[in-house]
Image 1 (cartoon, rainbow, N blue to C red):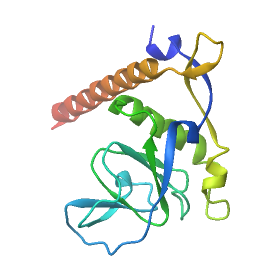
Image 2 (image 1 turned 135 degrees about the vertical axis):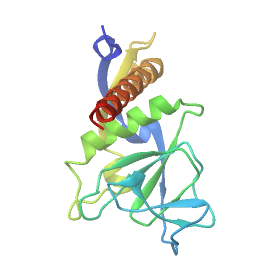
Image 3 (image 1 turned 90 degrees about the horizontal axis):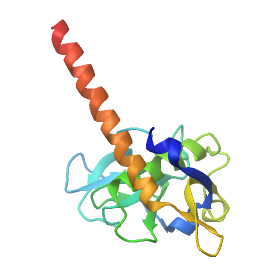
Length: 177
């Protein structure tokens, strides 16, 4: 039985999970030390580079608007600079695993990408009302809280599946060559 089948999902406000930071424009370059993340749905949102970071690594970036990218969320493993079309999402709980954060980025994208676009851009007000379905457990007082352990196990299992599929695809290509 997969981890997914053992989890219980419930709605959680994005702003209960993250502090929201507005991005700002910067002059980008073709190379550099710090990724410049903009309104793109490709390449982890990286469209260039800048000299200094606005956000540390271990945060998420969320595209607010733009042509085709609004609602796309990425895990940013390194310090980055979000453009004025991107929000930096700082986890309220420190020390979250990469697996949990990647799962949250995927859940946000899956549930926000179809909803937001240039005419219905993400802003702090809309984001404060945006719920996503993620793993939850029932606390001693009967309330539902995020199942961080379950989210981490799910992310780990999904990563393992991706790696397995990548190895299988590479082996198939190698046999044909």
